[in-house]
Length: 54
Image 1: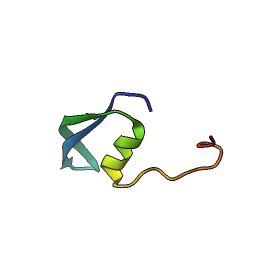
Image 2: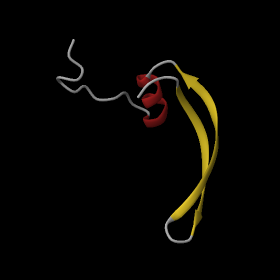
Image 3: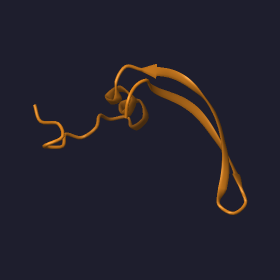
Image 4: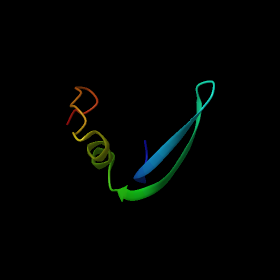
């Protein structure tokens, strides 16, 4: 992923045959991917050795 990281409100209207139409709007911009994940999931991303090595 790359910035800008955004959060929004979305509504999905279901149509027949497993399809839908989504409508939404951006509500805020977040400074980093970690901030975006915490805003959506409520917790930081897990530490993964190799990916997050110091």
